[in-house]
Image (cartoon, rainbow, N blue to C red; front, side, top):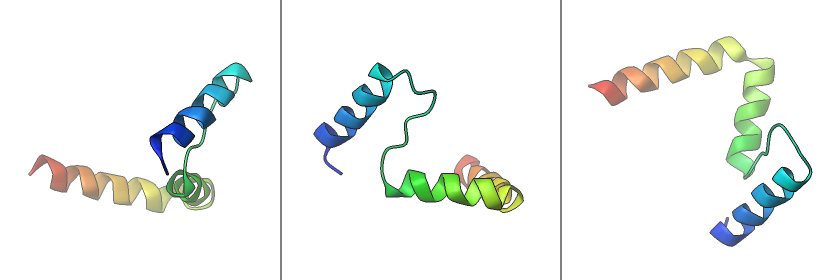
Length: 54
């Protein structure tokens, strides 16, 4: 996604007083996964953070 399009989505969400603004398909997929498989997403996040710290 081009930065201009992302900015447009973010500004639109702010103007509409949305609590969450989802930008991009990856974000949509992550939210969907967390909604239905929160334990798996948390496990993957923990593993990623451990690798990142190493």
